[in-house]
Image (cartoon, rainbow, N blue to C red; front, side, top):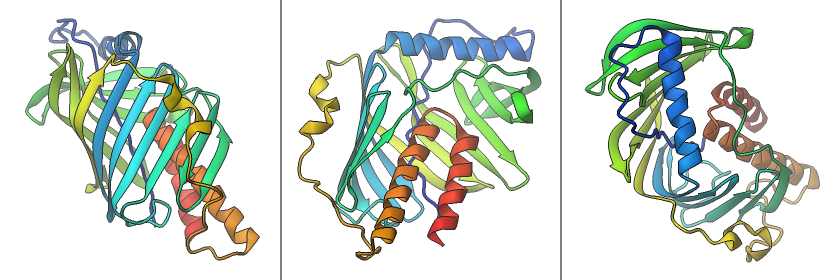
Length: 283
């Protein structure tokens, strides 16, 4: 059984810079990363509403991001995984960059340490330009990025304005592909409103952004876990009353939250490794 909650925001700041005459892969990669950083420093507050569908489930989600703080609310429309709950169940995750709190009807309140929401900045050891390709009607530079320990990813960056259009990561056990499409400009920012994830060529889930607001005022009370009521101790659905079973359910909930955080920060390989561990526990 596979579990994934993918909250992906593909955004870059339009500066009018073109990559039409980029000389090498490093220049393309640097231009793409520079625009990501510009967005992070410009869009202090972001509110996103979106729908996740795939792997036998669907959910409506709202994400509030204010600096290093984040709150995610999800309401299941169709449940395909017991960790997500049944239709109508609402879960909340709050992360202040140091601590993460998750609330669900099944597990109640779970608290775990958390790294900063900004994640780690990795410097590639080598970037190679592989030519040009058209993806979803967009002319792109295709580059191969190699990180320490021989970790690799292939990126397709818009030739016109350095937007990330497609990315691939994988090894001998499988390949993950993410395509960012339906680009719409919101207050000067081009944002992918449709994100499609595939495993070995088969679509596993899609995220459709239905609303996005940049630099809207966000009340700090949203990030106060003490104000979240009605979850109590929760229930270990399908786990019975055995404390050991309940402990296992809590561990999987914590792993689920960590997987979500890793995917959001773009740490795909770490997320996939943790997914595999979680799958073996659920078999």
